[in-house]
Image (cartoon, rainbow, N blue to C red; front, side, top):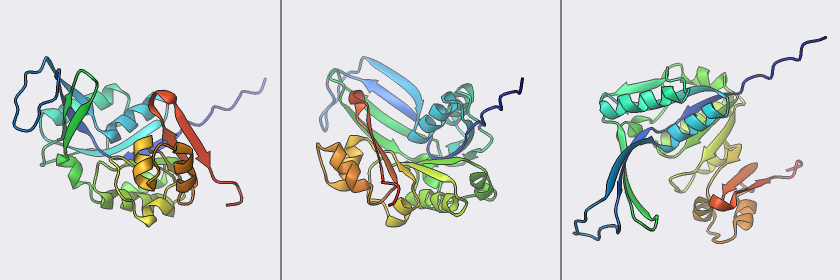
Length: 236
């Protein structure tokens, strides 16, 4: 009997953020100048880039993870969380700037207000020596916008030079340079981000069609309603 060849393990590379989420739960969020009493407080390892890394790890991809944390308690906790989730942290760099934080107030109706302090994430403005070689060896590069746009664009350019598939989650939503969209293979916004990028509200299919003029593939996530996938026709 001829052995069945093993399926190659996808090799993904992520350049992105890692935050410690500081979450306070209250009956009603305070108004300006008001003090309220919360019922619970949690510290939760997070950041859109770290979440991408953990999701890829759980899906079985070989992970190379590039992000920055401070030389502080939050940085150590984030490293431990990533390692516990199976993420390769060899490229998790420690810098003198404090670890990024997200300060979140969640009310009883599920609404939230968030203040993000980038901290160490704000220092990722480009690639460090050896990064391009790591990107070139990957099957995919996962990006989002919780690091400076300059760093995101530099990484996307490197991926394009080496034919590496680039997946961009455009969050937090902001105007995107045409060059970044041209270097993106799959755009992964939620419905609110898709509306911000296109100006089309309450019509995800129309937003997806508009985005296909700029990128080959789009997945718009729709919360409890699932997601919407759209791709250009093969001849486009």
